[in-house]
Image 1 (spheres, helix red, strand yellow):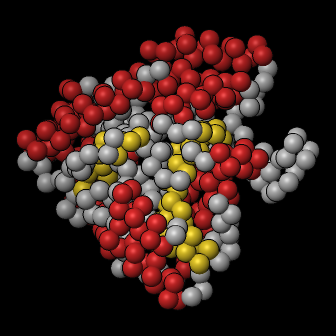
Image 2 (image 1 turned 90 degrees about the vertical axis):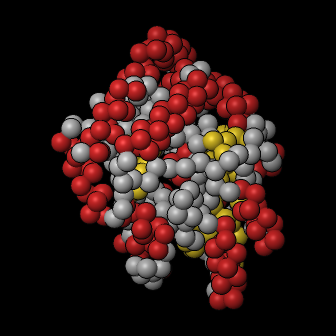
Image 3 (image 1 turned 90 degrees about the horizontal axis):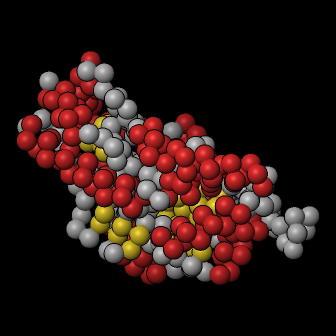
Length: 374
């Protein structure tokens, strides 16, 4: 059994993938070839934004978004501590300060009720200027962008959507990646839409931001690549990765439906089994992309027992994320301690993820839940 079965998907479109790659080999434009523009146009249409900009990774997508907003030293960026390291990393790399805000214990996303007090606390402290809120659509479930947007407007802050795991998800009838001033996603192979290497994309509706992003993506270029008008990065996308994504994009709408079916079946099986686990829930008006199916055990010891049961049955599992960002060594300079963000810490100690992909068979899910039940 595979944790994420990329081979099952590949079998459906192997010929299309090979044909697309062969086109790249024939025209020889291996970086920023015509497939990049085609992918950008198709994904902008899918997400519902005016612009989409392909780049080298999801991390670069976040970096480019913050660079376009001119974030740097002295700026505060508010985000979740319960996420992959890259979210906080890009903030710090630009010299800005990540200000962590605890999560809602049900959705695992940043808690809007804790956001306004965090902004007020930074203003009162006076050493940082609040600039950006960067929510994370964790495991594929969008954050509460209506509540976040109201707070951002009240405090004159920009919102950058970290939708690295959420392409295909929805919030109140709108697609993930279109829910903020800038939306960022990742095409890491395990993502709902993944390439066969690294890749990412930034989405926006603002023409000027799109122009800036296109400059920043290639070392801040101006009229040509040897006219550098600002500092940027080498964030270009490889054409072969775009060729792979174009083939896989054709499957995405159907795979999103299949992910909903798999998640619904998990919920039913877990409820019927009586196993002492809390299954993930999706608020009304939301749709998760189900990048991961993450459950909560009673405590860390119980999680260990569940993981041992899965291992004994040769069923793969994973923990996303065992140590919140505020307790990572790299962020020790921020001065946080255990207990500062209790919901994030509790989730990190109790959470684990089950196999999740569009091609997960019902009988395999039954085996998984049976193994959990012991």
